[in-house]
Each structure stands twice: as C-alpha cells, then as structure tokens.
Image (cartoon, rainbow, N blue to C red; front, side):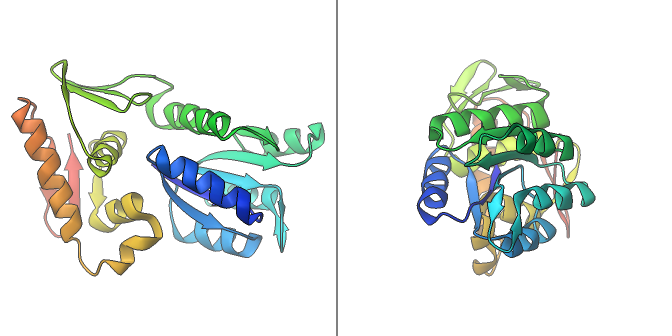
Length: 223
C-alpha cells in the first residue's frame, strides 16, 4: 500500500520511511506544506502520516485539503505537542488517528495497519476472496488453504487488486501504487506485465482461478 510521509525533521522522516518500506509499504515524502499539497493533489495514497508543525503551513490544513479533494486515504496526525485541542481539531477535520512524539515506529506501523484494514477491508484481520486468503500480519497468502510464495511486489499487487475488485485499474495507477515517485522513470510498463504474469502463474499453479482480466488499451480488472 502507498503511504505519504509529511514531516520536516529529516532524521524522523527518513526513519519512518525506512521502517515502513521494510514493512512492505511504498513510501513517498514531503518535507513542507507546499510539497504536501502538491503531492495530495497529484497522487492517490492509502494512508498519509502528517506532522502538524510544518514549514510554510500547517498539517491540519493538509487534512482540510484532503477532505476538499474527497480523498479516501487514511490520515494519521503526528505532533510534538500532546495537546487535546490539536487532537480534537485534527479528528474533527477528518483525521483517523493522532500520535504524539516521540513514538515507537512499531506503534506507528500498527496504527497504519489498523487504518488500512478499516478503510480497505472493513477492519478484518484476514482478507478473503473466494479461494484466496490473505493474512496481512504475517503477509501469508493461501489458495485453497495451501500457502503460496509471492515476492513483495506480487503481494502488493494482489492486495491492490482485491481492494479494487471488479473495477478497471489503469496501468499508470498500478505503476504509481507499486513504485511511487520512481515509476515514471521506467519508460514503459514492461515491469507491470512481468509481475502480473508471475502472479497469475503462481495462482494457477495452486489451482486458483484466473481473476486478472486485461481491459485492452486501459489496464486490468480483478474478479
């Protein structure tokens, strides 16, 4: 899943990025209000971690912008101030959670996971789609109750397809979701075709159905 980290402290910003990337998330960064507003207007995210105190603006105004855009992203506000007023204001504006600095990165990860389960999969700890079972906590995928081994990108691809089942997903949306800012440097979508081919092959080898349908000229539909 794709996460935007809005934080002006370089050490904390990089630590969050490194930790969440290791957990399998695609992370993009913004270090001030101007960058944050540009990012949320240009790209879609599954979760946004936003510091309240930002150069050139305020993290709460980013939350306001997200609501104007009718973004479906989960929002976690972080702040050095344990202020009840800031916490209430952030939640009233539409944030999903509030975390006071300093915090353990494992706690932030747990809250990101909880928000994504609630937003994408109705809060379920196990995700089921016909014969497919996914256990996000352990990143385990079962087909007909038999475990299959997926690469990190294949796992993210399967989750994204199930979260957007029965919808047409464009190739550019897939590329942006799986690679973030780096996808436009690739020059082609060959890497998407490769990951989809490998995911499809592993699903079929496990006697699963072929749910990935090509929508010619546009992208794919799952289901």
